[in-house]
Amino acid sequence: MPDSAIDHLVRLLGRLPGLGPRSARRVALDLLRHREQLLTPLMQALEDASEKVRECGTCGNLDLQDPCGICTDPKRDRSLLCVVEDVADLWALERAQVFRGRYHVLGGVLSALDGVGPEDLRIAALVDRAGNGELSEVILAMNATVDGQTTAHYISDRLKEGHVAVSRLAHGVPVGGELDYLDDGTLQTALKARRPL
Amino acid sequence: MPDSAIDHLVRLLGRLPGLGPRSARRVALDLLRHREQLLTPLMQALEDASEKVRECGTCGNLDLQDPCGICTDPKRDRSLLCVVEDVADLWALERAQVFRGRYHVLGGVLSALDGVGPEDLRIAALVDRAGNGELSEVILAMNATVDGQTTAHYISDRLKEGHVAVSRLAHGVPVGGELDYLDDGTLQTALKARRPL
Image 1: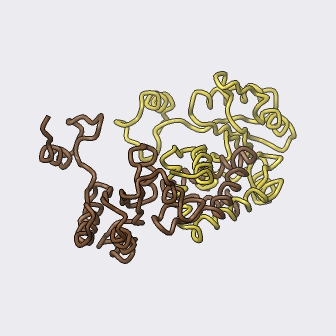
Image 2: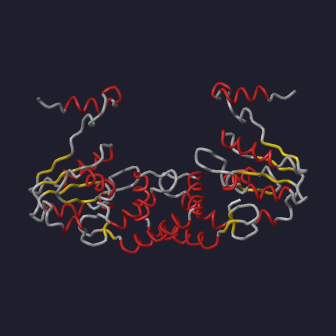
Image 3: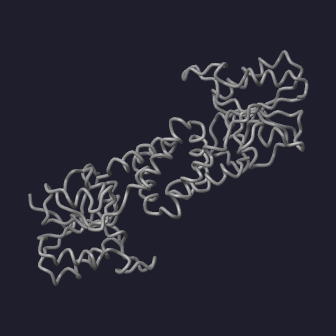
């Protein structure tokens, strides 16, 4: 019989992505069982993050400073801009250490179903950045979903008037992927975009 | 590139049960994106729970008071004691509203592999409770796992000298279960424990 304080905690934990009622209960119990090792440090980390972490006004990344560490890094190529849907995508590219330019986080994708229009995303700011003369190429790194690709097309249209090259990530067989396990769409794309050897 | 404060938060979240590195990142981002609706309430709930919730000295349940609400509830049958491995199991039984006696939380199961012996569990306290003359029956509600059943047998041996009846939960086909999907062990148990109609 979880009393009110535990119940409230379980309900809040259950609102986190990926946690259902059962896993929320498990997490709450685990936190209450390991207060010194888990609950107290987590409370401090949450407070710390809540106080210190802010959104970068330039690119939309989350960092302790505004503009963020990536935007102000002098070693990064200022002529390359990679547009991503979300901070999580930015983190993924940074983990892979494959891109040394700067980023622009849209904060979502266009979606007629969810009522997300261009004014809900950081698209105007992107058009501004693309027009400031510093950029030579904008790489659209949207997810390969319908909404992601719609957004990429919309942005590429908006950037047409400017003088920056616009590119998108290649689609095809993921490295390590086996043809037998891939969906038809990926196979078709990979075949159509085949490269001479 | 998660900075130190975010990184630290992600690492701590990743130590919660059921959360891997990827889901921990997702949770951290979600928290930072919805500060008003999620991060702040969660921080308060954690603090609240951390301050107020304590372990019941009698049964091991988690509650705002010690002894807990179940132990002090006058409407509960004081002659029945249900022994569970964990507070989560107590909650499960309370959600089902099928038991109106009191509980005893062991805090785990005996496990030679994990080095958990009788002295690591609340078994001595259980033997004390069983000997105080108030109880007529002790119901062992361990999980139907090898360790759970070993623990049940050990406890039943320890309680043999007393004058309380010791029982365990029935094993068999779960309600709604289809024979075709059940494992051999369950089928065998259900067959052996068949009841006259």
